[in-house]
Image 1 (cartoon, one colour):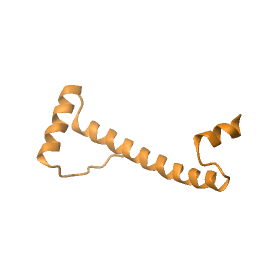
Image 2 (cartoon, rainbow, N blue to C red):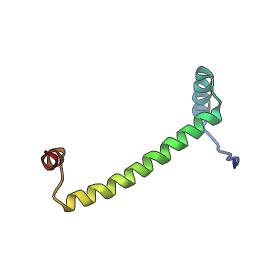
Image 3 (cartoon, rainbow, N blue to C red):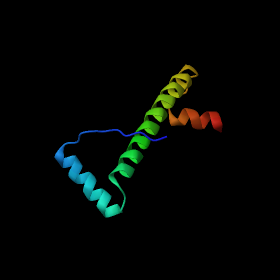
Image 4 (cartoon, rainbow, N blue to C red):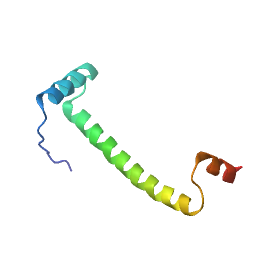
Length: 72
C-alpha cells in the first residue's frame, strides 16, 4: 500500500532534483524514494556496525590487522 508524503524543499534543492530527474528520465518521486531507501539502509548498516565494533572490541579486535590475524 502506498501513501503520500508532502515535503518542502528549498528552491535550489528542488531545481537540482528537477534537473536530475529530467536528465535521468525518472520522476522526482522515484529519486526521493530511492534516496530514502538508501538513507534507511545506511542507518541500519551503521547501527549494526556500531554493535559489531563494540563486540569486537570486547574480544580484543580493534584494527583490520587484528581481524586478519584472527582469520589467518
